Image 1 (cartoon, rainbow, N blue to C red):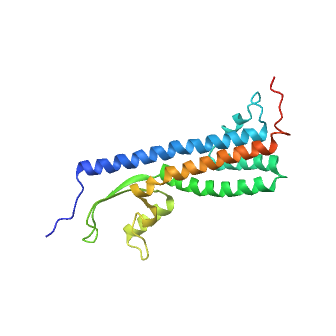
Image 2: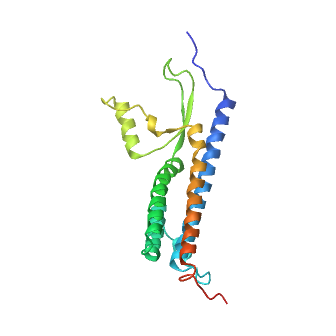
Image 3: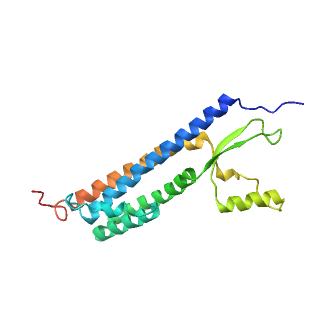
Length: 198
């Protein structure tokens, strides 16, 4: 009887370390996204550094709340600037998608799956998202209910190569926020932002 291929302890640990490194990088890069949103919020509310309008921003719980507050501030300042509103709408849509991915990763866990059959000839190590729906599906599988998907489901698995591209994607969102911040400044510099900084 042929043995299924098993990863050595060193190979397994190396994969774990790479997954943890990517998760850490993703979480840290996400802080940059939130920081840029805070700058946009402050600029829209009151760009004068003597009045730190960003302080309330950092009391908001959760990214969705931060996104909504930033969006409201942008709309309040830029309501006559259709191009800026359109840019913000596009950026917001990308941020919502990125946040879903970030949440899956931040709330996921590492799963080490041993070979189940001869078609799967090696161990499989991946990050998997956890959630009520998946737990319900897992119990349905255990109970042998018809139509239950094998847990974890393929769409919940994120391997090292899946995680590798995510920090770059998050950095792209940060860059878009920086460019948008600059666009707001350029648009309103001569009027709204013309401050006496003596």
